[in-house]
Length: 262
Image 1 (cartoon, helix red, strand yellow):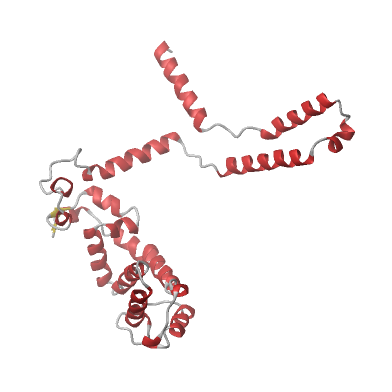
Image 2: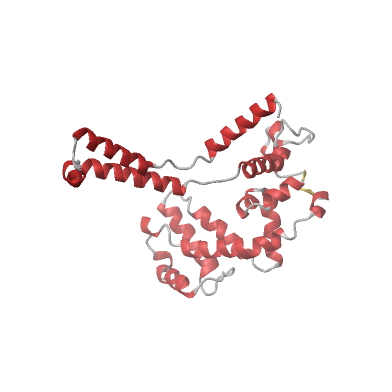
């Protein structure tokens, strides 16, 4: 092995052990400290517990327990996997970087025009790969959200997405008056028996909401009602993420790349 190669190998080995250094054996260090303390005091082992400070002993033991817990919860990942994930992330997003990809004349980063995000846009493979990462990333994209809504409309379940988005908008209401008005609209639109876009939730959750909104427009809301739709929202979001979203991802193919979305 040449000198430069040997130097590189030693550097890689040093970096490896800095990342994967095993937890220090605090237990042995503590026992050595106790033994040295007893030796200095010339204390017989049988009288060790009586002569050693119990508070100091408990302090050392608590530090040892805390250190072991931190070592156990420490995330371990291979360097190769971390590097591969970083490379994949960079490749996936390089199409959105104006410093790397400047071929598009209507790049909104360059034009500083918000409307450029929403029209005359051609999808890329990076867009499709990004949408497949999570439903949140799909909905964060204007075109992705539109295509997902159209997909749900064909499956007669578009109301699930609308309900989920309106519940998330409800959480941002600045005043209790705005919240009360919007909450009543959501209940009449999605929950009550004759709702035009009734969603499918379990009976116990529906009963709670029915009891809450039984007073109609006379319902008085306060801060404790801020989470009244949380159970229904969680149920519908989980349904979308585990059922509709995976099936939508199966429809994403290269045929979408030839279409210009406006």
